[in-house]
Image (cartoon, rainbow, N blue to C red; front, side, top):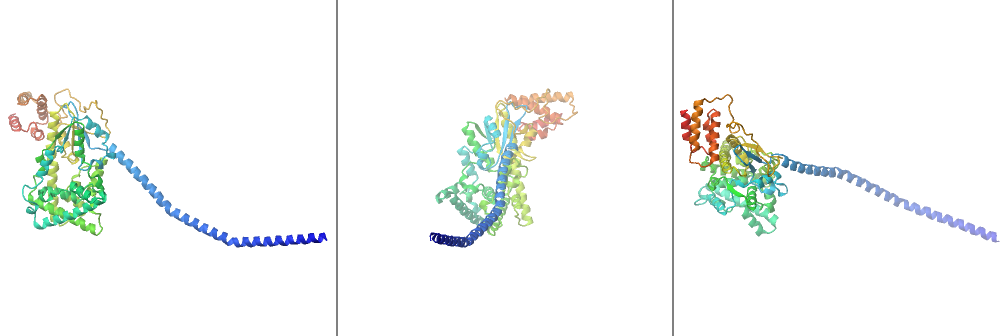
Amino acid sequence: MSLIINNNNKNELIITNNKNNKKLFKNIYLLIPSFLAILIVSLILLALLTAIIGLLLPTLFKLNKNNLIINNNKEKEKEELNNNNIFLWLINSTWQSSPSFIFGTIHVPYNKIWINNKMPIQVEKAFNLSDSVILELSLQKPEIVKQLIRCKQLSNGTLRDHLPKELFNRLKNYIQRFRLKLIKHAYIAHRRRSHARHHIRQFFPNDWEIRRPIWLLFLLFQLGDSPPHLQDLQQITSPMLDLYLAQLANERNKNLISIETVKEQCNPIESIKNEQIIFAINYTLNYIEWSEKREEIGKELNNLNNYQSINKLIKHYKSGTLQVGIEQLIFGAHRFAQNGFYTTPEQDKIAKEIDNLLINDILLRRNERMAKRTDLLIRENLNKTLFFALGAGHLLGNKSLIEYLKIIGYQIEPINNLKIEKNQNFKLLEEKENKFNNYLIPLQENNKINKLRQTKVEIWIRELSSSSSNNNSLRKFNKKVIYSAIYFKGNLQQLLKIDPYLIDQQKNLLKKKNKY
């Protein structure tokens, strides 16, 4: 009986197990679609992720590559700034007891050209070694600034009285449009309209209607390629490079000297007639209006964001590659033509002729005058180190200030990585045993002077050295000049043209020379 019961229990267990197995298989079967769905979704997500990574990798690689390029460019720029010409030269001669330096500046805020707003090491050392700093015009004195402002203005009336009516009205409309753009961009920078207007008043001259036509033209030249430095209006208050150097000179108790007068700065133009100035104003305004139309149709950036010539100027200056042709970055017609602007062949020709006259008056003529005064200042301070900070445009080209100084007899040595030590002996010229210095003026080989002529020349020197001057170094210099002039085939005329000390005595000297 018990066996039967046990068998029944066994059968029940088997039946129960079979049922459980069926349920298990059924559940597994039901789960298969879910597993498949999850697997498919996972595969899809994996495929999408792979595709996204595939798309992003080149971009990320490109960005990384660009960052590397940018970093390399920055390093290269720093290296160029350190290794190339930093527009600093050493001035030396046999008559100097102490060297002097000449440094080329450009009219932009100093923080736009110096890395981390710091002077290049060589410039700072030369600046610190100097006893005096010579600028084109020292603007640290309030009376000089007032004189400069007054002399830029008309003595009577306004520009309305000096310009054709149609030209004046076009000019006035443009100034109004330009002011609105300035205020808009300044407002974005300052977030307060009152600050923006105050900022614009500091930047843009309110006296444009009473400016002399030539100074209105200079203002339009600046606006023709957009006002400089507006890409960062917060930094516009940084002083210009030359003004910054003047401030440093004051802080370090250095003597400040102007190489030009206020009158010379105010009246730089001698070769251009009033009619030509009015033509140039109209031509420049035509270019500005042309630029505005191109902006409207999207062919060029907004005037406030377009810094072609200023950026070129800063870039070349920072890398030390600013060379001959700087005037084409500064003056009107040449620069406008580079940007694609032209009117008629006749007008374009006239505009370029006026440009050339401006270049001659503003750069070349002043180069010769500055060279004479540089020489004069050095000879008056033979035992002192002078630091000349003058426009870089005056230091480039065949008729530069530097070339004139070389003709006078100075040796000009560019300073790149040349070490400048406080007690360093800067003498670069070798002293000669005889009294003729062939660094002053090149000596001519096989040039013999007979005894009679030499005797008369010695008399001439004694007469010259017994002049009213009490400066012994000047008398010594004059002896050297006369001897060197004789060796230079007696070409005294060329020497007198560039020597400031003999100009007053030129006629008497030439008369004596003709007797020989």
